[in-house]
Length: 129
Image 1: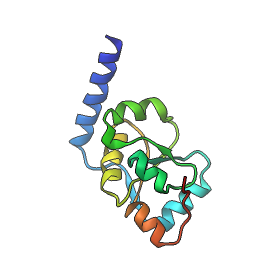
Image 2: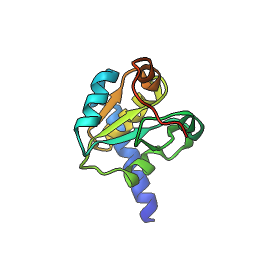
Image 3: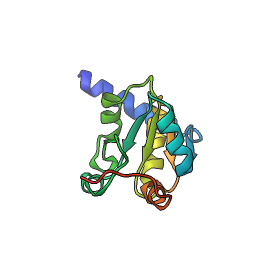
Image 4: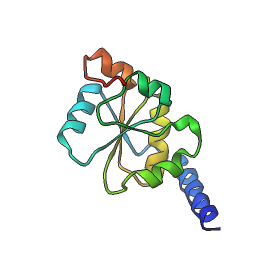
């Protein structure tokens, strides 16, 4: 029952957030890099698939695949609400969806414009596993 109530609350928060304008900021790769390197408490989140993550990701990024289902529940469990979240994907579409969800859950969110593709085009570092 407790799990059901938590899930119901998360769903309601997302629905309410969906009725509001986006409450996150989308920034260029250069701005994103500066912010994540200058703020020690930023949580860096990759929302791509595990296969995409393995092909290359930003240093120290954690992975929560937005396509795998239960994104909101996993984010609420794994991320600290008191710390901002910097989110990215391949091109920016999935990270914008994730940013909407995270903002609806009460997180302060920063979205990478153009995703990891734009990041790499600027010659910024990635980690390949």
